Length: 334
Image (cartoon, rainbow, N blue to C red; front, side, top):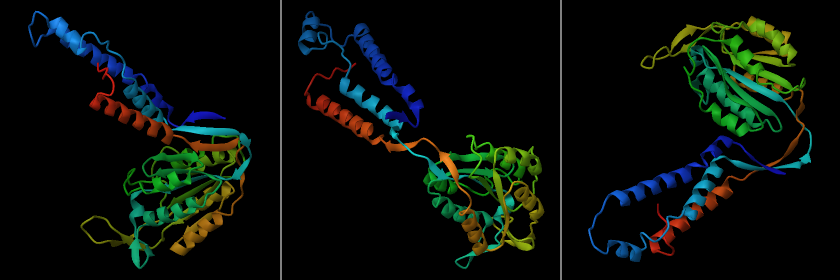
């Protein structure tokens, strides 16, 4: 059993409260040494009677303890019980979503209204990721460039929440499909050769980036990663909002289905053409039945503990403030 911190960088702030107090103490003492508000022959006696000169400037323990506990809470402490070793079986799954300009096309209907390809993909992906019990899931977005929005983790709730942050034009207008595959493959860091998959949702050809999609296929094979490609959209004319002030116009947005089929076939995955919302839902249901493998051999039970120092820190600051206000103990101010 041990205590771990999810954000240990915050612990670097632990010396700050002491430094703040010491700086304020020096400034306060300097103000008394170099300035006089009252000239009197018995000034020292009066100051001693008031306790201002005789009382030592001690460290306010209540205030200091409260600040330190709040910093510890920011570091997100977690109680990890490693005695419960057990193998976990699931999938390592990275979802890569195309956010290029063509994903604004409105060739799908939801509740009788047209929705964009990106809106449809994010909604169904959220439902898909929410069912990933026991799986590690990650999220990659791509357009002109490709970036990891969420690394592989056993936290589907956070990944689903990040899907809400995806917007049109987030990374430009083009499609760096090859770069997206390379970034997704780099997420698989453990020597595991089963239960690894990349699911790519895209509607465009590779028009940007430094890597061609076919050149990334050997890396996927070496890492034991299967790539499942989903061609979103229709090859014919579709509604496309070219400007905010203009209504959507019929536009032809080609999809390179053959490239997507080749990528999937050469990595042991499958290609899907999702032309209707129901079809895309069926694709996700099929992916949900793919093979599983060991994803975490250590396991263990982890319990969030940030609430404890947060409550204790707030309580310490409250008690210290009440004592200062009502004179329950010397203020010990700097």
